[in-house]
Image 1 (cartoon, rainbow, N blue to C red):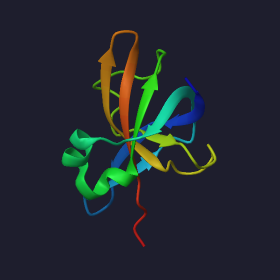
Image 2 (image 1 turned 60 degrees about the vertical axis):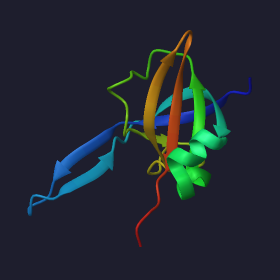
Image 3 (image 1 turned 45 degrees about the vertical axis):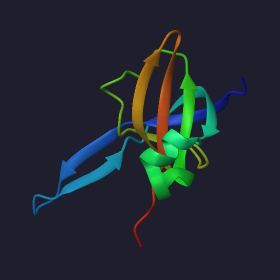
Length: 110
C-alpha cells in the first residue's frame, strides 16, 4: 500500500459582525500518512454524481483522526502545509484495523 504524507488542519468556525459563519483552518498542520485513491465505482457515482472527480477515498491507521470529531476538518493533499487545505474530510468510517475516509476537493469561490 503506497502511503502519502498529507497534513490535517482543524476547522475553525467563527461568526462575522453580521452573524454569518466564517470558516477558517488552524495554522498548525499535523502530518498524517495514508493511502489515497481516486473514488470510483457505481455506488460512489450514484452518491456523488458530478462531484465524483473531486472525491478521494483514503485508508488511515493512527490515533489522530476520530469518527464524529474530524469530519469537515481540512487536508492539505496537493498544497503546501502552510497553505489553506485543498480537501475537506467528508466522512470517517471505522473498519477493522484502519479508518476509511472520503475527502472532497474544496473549490475556492472567485
